[in-house]
Amino acid sequence: MVTGPRVPPQLETERLLLRQWRDSDLDAYAELLADPAVMRFLGDGSTAGRDDAWRHMALHAGAWSLRGFSHWAVELRESGELIGRLGPWFPEGWPGLEIGWVIAPRHQGRGYATEGARTALRVAHEHLDTNVISLIRPGNEPSAAVARKLGGTLDRTIDFMGGSLLVYAYPPPG
Image (cartoon, rainbow, N blue to C red):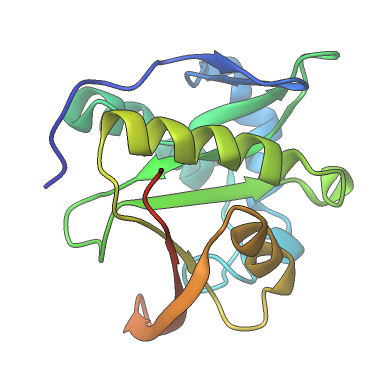
């Protein structure tokens, strides 16, 4: 289990606000999880309904209480629009401290995942652990490209959560 001080509950990057979850995020988050293009590389690939989206938000909000960190809600600073989630993640049974990201398709390709995940990786190294990974489904080249931009290298392939996952490892800071 990762130990250490809590990570900041809110951070700003050049274009993003990484913040705690709000009940008012439900509509935008439910839309995100109902999109087959988003979900094809997450979990078992199934889309999620509104009730599941709420439980998913509660899962991340609860992890903040239990572990002192989780994925932040990702908001565009300019407009206040919720566009996804990202951050450190390490629930029970996970293969390592992970930096993960999910960005709405209409906002992909603009560098938001890289910008936010770079901040999340720095925070994880500073507050949690120097051993950090990202888990990426084979075929998810956009996410693999983000991992490589962050300095990650393909370390191994594992069978986890019902399928193969590529494990990208990040070098410790220094």
